[in-house]
Image: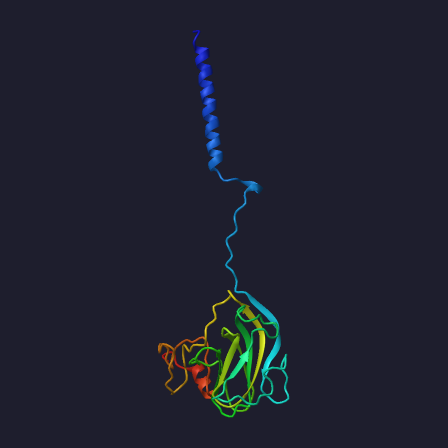
Length: 231
């Protein structure tokens, strides 16, 4: 029949067009494979901007002792009524005021005149908090690491509950925009046979788990280690 070849040709052209369109649609919806396929890496959270420094002495109240720049040295024992106001920003490699959020300090108490005393480090522009960074017995030197928030003027205030010498070294700082530093706050007080308060009164002297415990005597520490599970 004379019309069939033309009809067959038209059908072939239509099928070719449909096949081409289908291939284009598949190519558009199918993700690329092989070396060209690049998967985006997950976003990494920004890390706190900590800058470590060589340890440097910022304060030493003992006689005939030196600091890195001659400031806050040889002033004699610090007394409860006169806390040590210490400038940290802009010294020993620490960034200037307004460019630092918190500092990493090592605070040492020497020759305390009373057992059971303590040291509190806090921003110089704030009221003294109900907390301690260092618990001290009479006589021997006791040291502890402290992450301290600075005041807007770059200073900390160091309170002592009994007369003692203080030594303060700096090991690094967090630049502005790094960690959110807080003033010390007491969360729990597991001291035996003695009522103590916390910032919210939620943790008692028999709290089953606390991040850090300070004891007034070896007997208390041993009791805490061996206490019954019901305590």
